[in-house]
Amino acid sequence: MPTLKNYIGGEWVASATTTFGDVWRPASGEKIARVPYSTAADLDRAVTAAQEAYWDWRTTPPLSRARYLFRMKEVFEANFEEIARTLTTEQGKAIDEARGEVRRMIENVEHATGVTTLMTGYCLEDIAKDIDCYAERQPMGVFAAIAPYNFPAMVPWWFLPYAIVCGNTFVLKPSEQVPLTQTKVFELIDEEVGLPEGVLNLVHGSREVVSAILEHPGIAGVSFVGSTPTARLVYERCGATGKRVQSLGGAKNCVVLMPDADLKAALPSLVTSFYGCSGQRCLAGSLLVPVGEAADQVVEAFKAASSAVRVGDGLDESMNMGPVVSAAHMQRVLNYIEKGLAEGARLVLDGRGCRPAGCENGFFVGPTVFDHVTPDMTIAKEEIFGPVVAIVRAKDLDEAITLVNSRGFANSACIYTQSGKAVRQFKYRAKPSMIGVNIGIAAPMSFFPFGGAGQSMFGDLKGHGREIFQFFTDTKVVITRW
Image 1 (cartoon, helix red, strand yellow):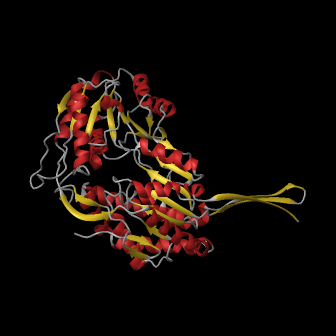
Image 2: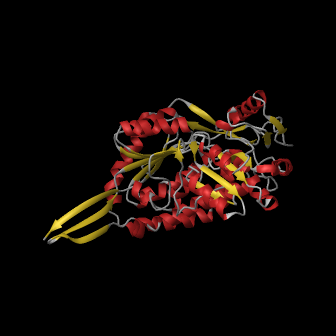
Image 3: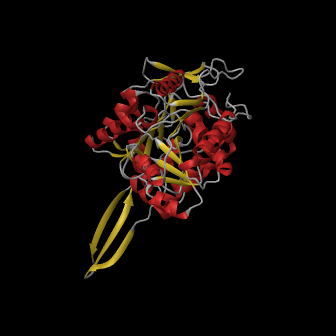
């Protein structure tokens, strides 16, 4: 069983730690690798390597930096399937979902190559007699990202390519639960891209490394994606230590079905919304909100569609949904199902005891649907992060919007309707930052910003899009008289 190494200063090096964690294959419950819980000293070594590489990289022309990304795209395309299969092996999601995730990773590389347009500043002559003013974007130094387990290929690349193409150097800490995907990606970069040593660094680990990132004086900014309690902590510590921060937290996303919605057309995307990635994503549907008298029809149709979801090993091309990431998370999801029952919700589809053939020791929870959930129930308020759907009935659009805005989280919300008036009211009044209309997953492409509001986002500059170039640069204003 392999023991992973860190990638620091262009070399694969063993951590100084004596503490290791296990990496599991969720579909089978087998251990497949050991990951080091690296030390603060390991992190400091990576930051030092990044600092030493910074000035030469910062003075490399932006177009030359972008050419390394063009090469990365070529390498990732050539190894596309291997990255996707590594992802599914350690995270569990269905292989088609993994392929979609790797595609989104590559799209961020593609978008970042637009640096020569998107990093440009602006100027104005004659702000006063014989005086001109320039605003120039400049890199800032070493940035770091702390990545989650649900999208091990894509999420680090919401940040990494933009940071380095702007002239910064970078340290990545992937989730200790899914470290193999980025290890594979960094191996490809090391072997085939030829990036200067120290520009990119990877440090495996858990809490000690996270704390070291937040406290290290040599790190200029931090990008984080994870749970809301941790996102809030990251935001607070970065504020206290003077770092830039974009800290993306959890969600409790509502999917509203108006009475005029085309239910037959909506069902496939609804199933994907609630059960994609086994519900382990911040854009997943969590509350299904049928409006008006058609609620019974919606419940029956959604139950039937949910029952048809094929659950099993994500590497099996015929499966729609894989396991959750770990035994501990499986138990957490099961506990929420018990909580729903205890609080009086009606269980219409029970995913407990899901044991697909050949995967009896895997970490599975099948599609689960509760009806007659009230807004004050735990399963209607807290992020479950699993394939558990809470149906909360609403009498009208106003009541549905009130529900959306009362969850505390404000990441995403979707509406299915044929009414332009309803759509305008929904997008105008709903608080979440990402809104879907007749789609179940409001996932922005790489050239639009990704991030929520409320308890779903701490910080003001979101992931990818145009504004990511602002996050990774300082705007220097130069005023000249000649």
